[in-house]
Structure formats: C-alpha cells, structure tokens
Image (cartoon, rainbow over all chains, first blue to last red; front, side, top):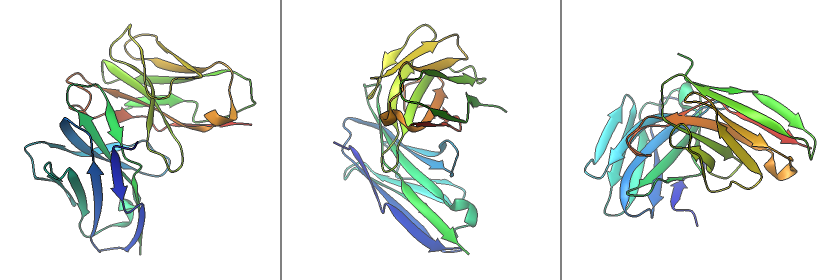
Amino acid sequence: KNQVEQSPQSLIILEGKNCTLQCNYTVSPFSNLRWYKQDTGRGPVSLTIMTFSENTKSNGRYTATLDADTKQSSLHITASQLSDSASYICVVSQRGNNRLAFGKGNQVVVIP
Amino acid sequence: NAGVTQTPKFQVLKTGQSMTLQCAQDMNHNSMYWYRQDPGMGLRLIYYSASEGTTDKGEVPNGYNVSRLNKREFSLRLESAAPSQTSVYFCASSGTGGWGNQPQHFGDGTRLSIL
C-alpha cells in the first residue's frame, strides 16, 4: 500500500502562472514531511521540510503547507518559470522508525 | 562541490552478467542509501548503511548486495542481472539526526538497462 499519494500526477502550466501540488499521507506517527524537486536526468534535491508544528514554510517562489490533522500537504509554485519544469516528490518520515515513505511525484511542465 | 558522485552514468548489461555501481560522497555523512526509481513508481530503498561498517536491507533488496567500503564509499552489486533490474539507480547520503530530520543528498543516478 502506498502511504503517500500525490495529485495531480502531471500538469502543464503557462509560464508566469501559479500552481498547487497536493500530497496526502497515512504515515503514523508523523515526524516530518519534505518536498524534493527532481529535474529530468538529475537526482532529487530537497526544497523544504515541514514538521508537526509548522503550517507554512516558504523557499523563494515555493510555499509548502501542512495540515497534520488531515494529513495533507501542498506545494504552491508562484509565478512559474521554465526552470520549474520538474517532478516534485513528497516524502514523509515516520517517528521512531527509520523509514521514509515516498510519493510517486507530481510532474510539472511549464510552457512559454 | 561534488556532493554525491555515481559511476557509471549509463550501463547496458546482458542477462546474467554482474556489475558494481559505485557511489562516493564528500560531505562527511554517516548514512548512505541506494534507491531504484522506475516509471510510475516512487523511489524504493534497496539497501542502506547507517554508519561505516553497517548495512541493512531496505524495501527491495533481492538480487543486490552492498559494501560500505569506508565512510565515503558505498557500492551496489548485481551478481546476476535480470531484466527486472532495469531501472535508474540513485545513491544518497545524509548527516546524523534521524532519517527524515536531515535532507538526503542524491547523486545524478546510474541508468541501467538489462537485455
């Protein structure tokens, strides 16, 4: 069973527009949630980490939110650029257990 | 600023052949990991090494072996390659503080095709 579900699987957006990616998880007990960006042909790179007590965190044009009660997170991309074309992977860490649960990723394509 | 370096970047093997994927990190990290990434699936952990001298199985260890040669290097070996092992393999490393508390730093992957 997949403990981390991401939606939409893929989306195409116009340069300059905003978009929001969703991550729902069932991992329990929760430790933290991290968003990674993976460019084509490259390894994933960490964008931001959300802990239980955090609701919102920004990294430039990327803003992550977390609702630990509903077990949902989102990643909002503002004023998208061509360089935002990538897969965005949601990774949830389980407290007390050395394991990470990976989502399948949101594939974002930004077109001019 | 090398980070995590994986070699080779591409490899084609025939069924039954063996090979070793190499990984080295220069960030003085204690923990290292091997993942595979297949289309439509999330990253899956093959093996990990929490510290030098230790290795443990992950989610999909069958058909693979690993060696933590020293603190910097962690290799993955396919003893008898099978077509089901066609994948992109990523090595990663992280500092101490729990798996999720520190970001994992990934290499750029080895693209392996088995015919």
